Length: 610
Image (cartoon, rainbow, N blue to C red):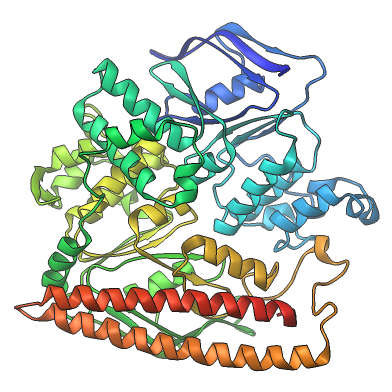
């Protein structure tokens, strides 16, 4: 493989702290490298150095003469005065860029929902991110460096980006360097992992799963990492090995070594035990949406209305762990507001159990603004001094340390914390308040992989109802037991097949916006549809579609009855957990049947072009 670029003895220090110390490494043709490490350990600094956007204190960066490098920064670097189209393709005429299949693919994958003629300054943060990414990806760079590219992307956008990067070059060509906390993304695209820690960079073969194993083995052999961190890594590895076959088959590491390492590691959480605890804390009823509809004004004067939800029914059970996915703007955050009582529906009703105490982790974490002068430990101790985790009592200081706040950091003022540290602190603050329904809105923003593992460990032992909105499919699969989707048409759909099923549903629906309308300059030429189907076939397909939809409705009703029976059985003082387990098995069978029916629906809808 040909050498693309490299570093020789790089050193960088900020004030009294050394970020990198004598680091030497290289990027070759065919390398797809993921960069991981704790927040502040130098991941972005390393990337800026390699992209020659920053100069080291000592050492040098070498680059092959004919190599071009594309770089996506975390910060907004677009000219706000430009229109979206001009920001991406410059002064090219439509027929020029539209004749290039690679550019059309990038446009359709990233900016199909963005107004082509809108000013960049008028876009949301997520839209600006997509535009900047599209501008980079339409180029022909030999090396692409991406700093947190999945920020603000929904699950569908992350899946598209992973596929694009896998297919962008031949296996032995091009180089990719990516800093991201998205562990699924790392496993999908990377064949090497660089861990930045303690001013050095360690190289591991394989994606995130292989890195977890190698790090666990390194920590065990060296015996220099404290035992609790080893246990966290082993627990993470156990999840990887017991997860979906696609995840465990791909990484190139010895399965025998993995099985030996996790032989004594229990399942991440005891679902039945947590269910018992949740039922005792919540009682029969939690939160129910019954036939809820919600319309919001399209603009400030209220002249137009947009229907966000239409006849949505959702019943949360004690101890249920639900993940919500959907395109940006489909109403995920609004659904949390409905459940929390912050927004009232325009139709239907919201029922709230008498013992329900909710807590919501918002995306902005503005709740901490008024506590800027308080110390981290003071914020937590003001709520509670002793907390139960996994059946064990820990002090506030111990819990704060578990989520990455060292003894020294615990006395830092809130106003001096980074975005990721504020998010960690607010989550802790919510947990020590002992809610029995916890709702997390994009909890992975600004967090590194180590912190995410620690948070997942805390959530494993939390005995309450959990609702998570996230584009991080690894987190959703890790901490939730079921997933549902907002498809942008006012409906809420069960996903017995998980995030993969959601992506299939979205592909079958076509490149629609959150409001259900097609909007892509890249997709303006040509249309998918009925192809060569005869009129008789189309008539039969319409009948089949109606039949399948009736079956889905019938199965959904059966699932609702089973869920109600489980709630009633669990609310009794002498709860029969054998009966609960039997009902749960029946419910899972119905969820499988729903998945099969939805697959039939997608195949039939494809014939009709719907």
